[in-house]
Image: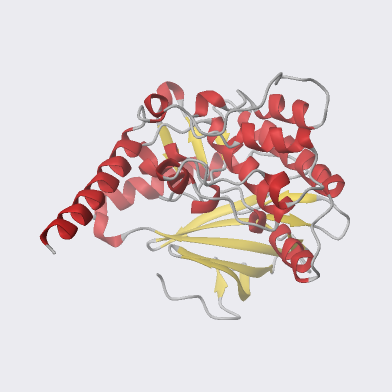
Length: 327
């Protein structure tokens, strides 16, 4: 991980670092002051490329960063922070975004949990509507844009009640022919990541990958319980406990929407974010029976990354059996 920038350090003769507000394996997010616009605070996302890749690959990574940052800078939606600038210093890239004040939804969920309560479904539904609007906007871009790291801590609620989807760290732009450009190599956060995303940048992800993360996020917010991750569910079918078994106040309709979104195979999820939103808001009824959550083995095995998980599991089982035999 790169060494953090120092407080009061100025980048590009403009952005004065105040403090770190987020940190990851490939860089940090800083709160900074824009010295050209008095009083304006911004968030600087830092990206340091893997030095082991070599000069040529790092050069290509920086070019990809510029292409993707240019796309992000054109976005304009009330539920997304505005990207206002981007630049590189040495082997580090920086993305400048609006600073979003307020608590993230993970913090609000933990406060409720500490009080022995659940977040109210009506409130979560309002947030879900705003998040759906942002995702529909991203997915409707040409080419579509995937966020790939939707989770409660990446959703901030401003003092005015506006939800913002922050941290574009793993954003992926789908180019023609399913080719992809990625700002940062990564897979998202395990609890909210679908199986197909574990293949890294070569994985066959599309807008339905964000839909899975959307469902997993709602699951966590409404149950105070982290969902079983996709790999665990593949190895142990039935490990995902239906939301209403944890929080009986969750409506049957919302539970079905969440489980629909969290199907292991993309083909079993809603085809679009708009379709899912229309269902959980009651605008239309796409489901006429209980949504399957665990799929047939033949469907799941279509993923190369799932085959790898299966081989590892079988290897561990054989190793255990051989050990027991020779004892």
